[in-house]
Image (cartoon, rainbow, N blue to C red):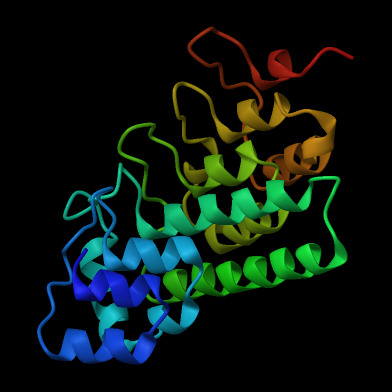
Length: 216
């Protein structure tokens, strides 16, 4: 790892600033292909993202196909997936009160990162190079209602295609219909429909979203 990557991982915003000022290679990646920005987004380190130069770099790193070193994901994708993981962790039964508070704090920090990334130019329309998924598909697949609502409201009156984009042939509404009830299925389906999701679209198996619903 480069000193910049180590400083980001250690959450040392001041050192990150100094290293960038000194000419550190901001495009350097670790052995998993993660850049400094991908790491900051994944860990929810808003203070690191707020370093002015890092935000400028973001414009280079966030827009495909210019430079997406980490397996097909933009930094925004990484932050959303990390937030999904926290959501799953919060749903575990055997959490102590302290663990629950800690997860809530981490969740808030990731939300701050997501908002910061969007405010500084991250595109909610960027697709994962491998799966063709957008942030919409990622929020739906884990029943992440709060982020889903945020992205849908950001898109309001802009792209009609956003809510009906396909990944592996499925729209977000197909994915939502297939969710179990404990993943906020009804609320998510309703949200998508309110924002223009088309229930008549068919996937590669010729199924409409209603055909994807679990039995019962």
